[in-house]
Length: 177
Image (cartoon, rainbow, N blue to C red; front, side):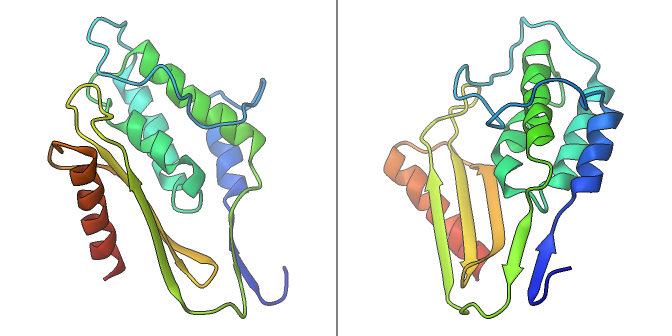
């Protein structure tokens, strides 16, 4: 217990899911997702157990409530729950390997900071190889405290990077409101 600080940690839960999914041993890794190769539907890949894949994704989704550092990687992997392949499972296992080395990361809410609302957002253009849709990401702070974050594939296909940015801005403004 630390005076004047509220914190959100899920170290115990992280250890539990690492054990549950057989990922509690081995080498950790420094990032939750590789920059390349990018994930796609991988229609020619070897399918893996859909129930096990969904269980892993569900465990990770619950953890995103206190771990904004894994949100984008988990959301990318969650797109392929209907037909997961070895390629997708490899990326999910990478997230677990990252968690193994970052068990004690959480969110701190120190007392006494300002109440100025600040939002940051970004998008990519046509990042999804399967649909050519863009992904929006954003984070909101109240003073120096995290209050909200998101990563989401956009509903419409943007015709330009500018249009993708405007759609991300619209989503961020809606979240702030």
